[in-house]
Length: 61
Image 1 (tube, helix red, strand yellow):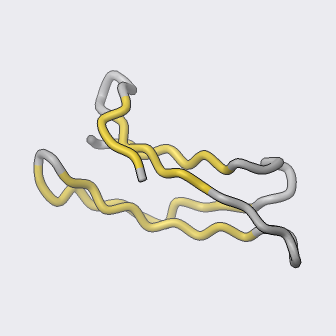
Image 2: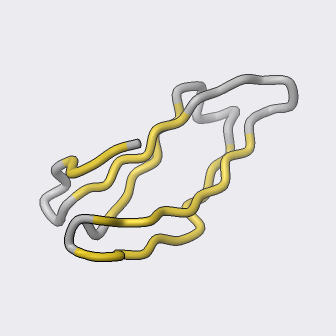
Image 3: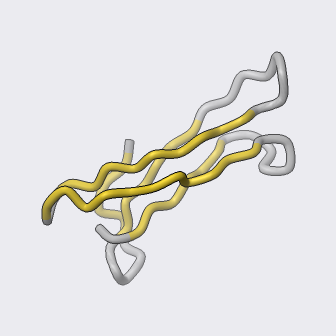
């Protein structure tokens, strides 16, 4: 689980987001830090996926 992917369920042109870091805790756990900035007054939702070296999804939140 060495990579992460941020998916924002809104227009990507309107929402700013940055992965600020990640840590491989162990073979089954990754901790991801990110910052999302939607336009003022806009609601949005996001999902974080953990990907393996072959880009297969190994976890999500």
